[in-house]
Image (cartoon, rainbow, N blue to C red):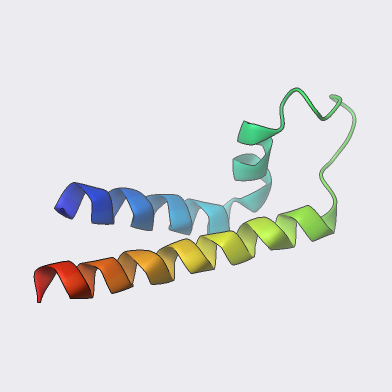
Length: 65
């Protein structure tokens, strides 16, 4: 349980802090080397990170209480 919580929390924090790098992990083949991901996709990645952090905290409260 603790490992699942820490994994979700770590991925969520990384998506909030480094959205461009986390977005590039899934889209390496789709983007050319010169292209940068658009601001829209970077913001979506940040929102996904915040949602993942909220899910991790909710999971921790439910699992450890």
